[in-house]
Image 1 (cartoon, one colour):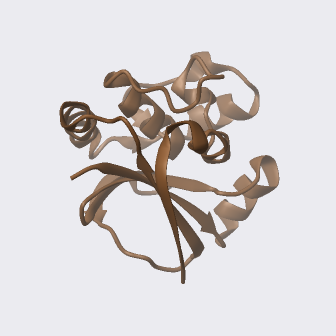
Image 2: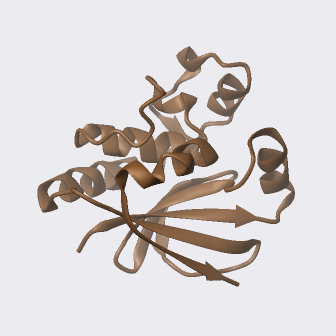
Length: 156
């Protein structure tokens, strides 16, 4: 089973603020089978059953090409170690003011979490960014053609 990245187009107030600042998509989660791990405001890093639900109007799922089973295990194991950590509100602020030194390894925002996870396995999703805290969902999504094998879209 391969890892996938699910990019969400949100309709909540928080999502609209992210889209205003940085465009859609506004959220990313890492999907493995029927589970996903994500970092969400007010909820932190959590592992939940993958499903479509409001407040998202569309989800684009990307399958990674050239990822080995060993790399998938490294990414997923590291992500599971992050479950229960808080949401990185200060990191979001650092993203807005372009200061990656505000990174906190005990807290994550969604794209920071996904970028850091894949870096652990030697996979670079966003080659223009040195630090995971510099990456937004839309930035990561813009490079999908370089690492994505197959994309499918689901609308709610």
